[in-house]
Length: 110
Ligand SMILES: CC(C)(COP(=O)(O)OP(=O)(O)OC[C@H]1O[C@@H](n2cnc3c(N)ncnc32)[C@H](O)[C@@H]1OP(=O)(O)O)[C@@H](O)C(=O)NCCC(=O)NCCS
Image (cartoon, rainbow, N blue to C red; front, side, top):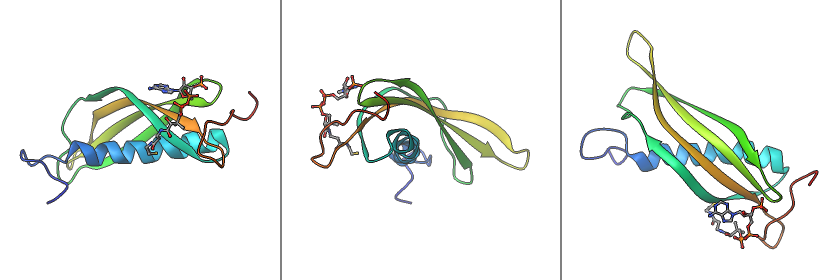
């Protein structure tokens, strides 16, 4: 129940946290080490996620800077017996590679 909002839909913050985790895994692989989320842009909740939906999170590199990586994260819900595929959210997450002092670290190869 704590993951539902007053409309009975899955709470947006829960979906956002799954997106942050997924984007961070991809960014961490590219950075070959720890990363932190510095910004979330262009976050769109397109359709609600309903109880019983199975969500899939897709994350891919969209841009790369000196220490930062932009990861596009899209979420698709699979719903009902017909297995309907519904795009539910999309956002552009920026992660920064961190050094041992928690400061920005150049990405491998830059
Ligand atoms: C991540 C952090 C170390 C960056 O420190 P900073 O002093 O802003 O570092 P810089 O100004 O050198 O910026 C580092 C990179 O981030 C990018 N950046 C900083 N703020 C940004 C923003 N709001 N949007 C997009 N990119 C941003 C910069 O463009 C730079 O990228 P580049 O090196 O590829 O050109 C610092 O902001 C921080 O610790 N934030 C908290 C992170 C956190 O707790 N996240 C939540 C949990 S993971």
